[in-house]
Every structure is written in structure tokens, then in C-alpha cells.
Length: 70
Image 1 (cartoon, helix red, strand yellow):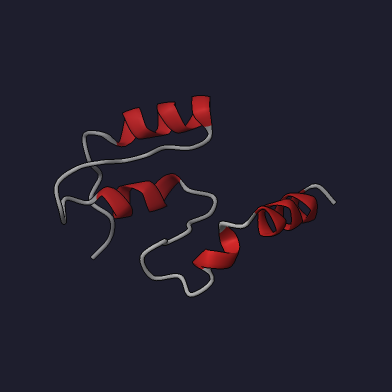
Image 2 (cartoon, rainbow, N blue to C red):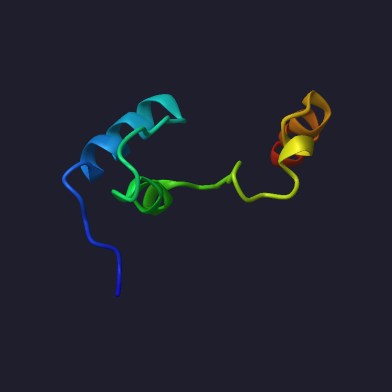
């Protein structure tokens, strides 16, 4: 089964294009993650990623930023 387009998809895309990042809040299991993944260029899952502690450090963010621009 593929992605089921949602009423909020156009608004998500518009806001993401203008700001670059979003916080999506809503009821449990309503499709927030699946909707977000349709438009995301990257995904960090703070609930399941084993490297989240490293990702939150300034050193890691600076390293990631340098990799993107080199």
C-alpha cells in the first residue's frame, strides 16, 4: 500500500519551503511521520536513532555542516 495523500500535504510543503524545518504535532498514529517523510530531504528519529546523543552535540552539527558545503 502506498502513501495516502492528506489534506495537510500542501500546507506542509508550503511551510517547509518557506522555513526549512517544521515541528508537526498531533494525535498519535494520525500520519504525522509518513506525511513529513514525503517532503523531507533528511530524517532524524530521536526516538529510535542510536546516534542521537552525538547528533545533538555542536561538534557533530559542525562536522555535518562542513560535509554539506564541501
